[in-house]
Length: 195
Image 1 (tube, one colour):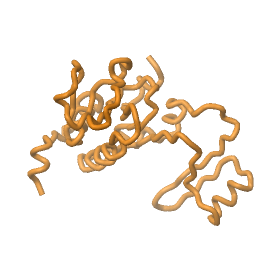
Image 2 (tube, one colour; image 1 turned 90 degrees about the horizontal axis):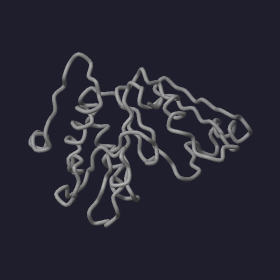
Image 3 (cartoon, rainbow, N blue to C red; image 1 turned 30 degrees about the vertical axis):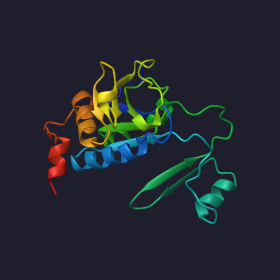
């Protein structure tokens, strides 16, 4: 059992074989729905290239570019820690990233990407992309979310990627240990009928 397996809150990955399968769109909806249901979600997103959340001309950028190893920017509403790791030859492990979260403040950690990490994953697939599936070769894939689930030949749960309510209900039922109350769940058709 790994460090990640022992964690509360649970860590669940959203993965795909290729870009543009809809991982980010799905994640945004899952986060919104989870918040509406009283769940606190943290997200870890893997970036494939060098990225920056700071901008030239900002004091924090100037301090970091002057050589600070870490810059923490804070206000009443949020804080962000930027750490320079120029000597790293590899991406940080998921365990390292999760350890930096304030886990006592969240009910669920969703991970976008990092498909090679040994965590439970929901594979997102779009039929029109004609890409191969990950699940036949990855036993950590616990469900497949597809825009046409009837086309998938597997014993895994097949979820409708156009119905994030169904996917969140699956995650909750399988991984999220609820506080004393049960929030119940809406089906996709029930939620679309409201408004």
